[in-house]
Length: 277
Image (cartoon, rainbow, N blue to C red; front, side, top):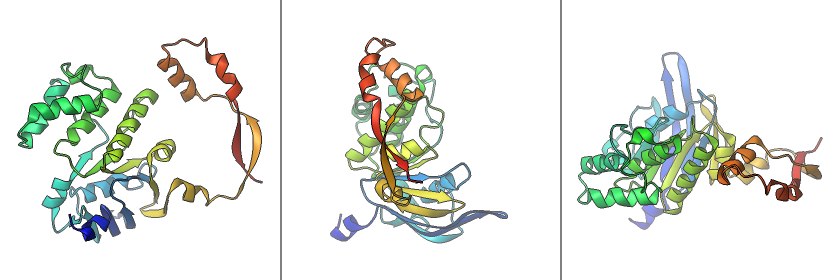
């Protein structure tokens, strides 16, 4: 890789537009994604997130604008783009009849890798699925299926991964499992473009967050930069009750034992920021 290419963003989007009949879905989208980072595209249902991902992954053609992925123009060099990316859709694309290991072997052989067994075993270990590797995927939990789906998409070591709402429909514990997987990808140098409608997901994972609303990016920045858009906050001492998600994850983590729950009550008084009036 040349020095110039190393300095280029992994993904560059300029003026992308897309309409379906009389509906303008994307109205001029612009952003860059730095290599090795997690970029969250945040927006409500119908904001155009999936449409944009389909354009960047060469599954759909834009009406106007340009986009490059891994330095390749998505319109002019779609084959090179496809070799550079992996796309994980909103629903896990695993074969329930096959075991987890067989799913990985199938993809490795389709990609004509020389060592499919080694690749499959390595990914099972990497995603904490070794013990379940010989079980049929139909027996997997939602979080396990999603991790297997992401593992399958990483065969061939693509430098860029698109995750389109990867935690939709998952329970809280499974969501945390997927979050850990996404962080692991980025720590290994993979560029991740994540679409989500969950605010906490973007907050926990993303290096940068772009808010897509009515077909355009209305804000783009780090979490700290986005928080500065609100009025200054005052600090007050308040009593913070645990959320239902806190309770659920705590009970699941300790197998339902709650004897030590009282020990944590001293931490319930925390300093939080409240918007000044």
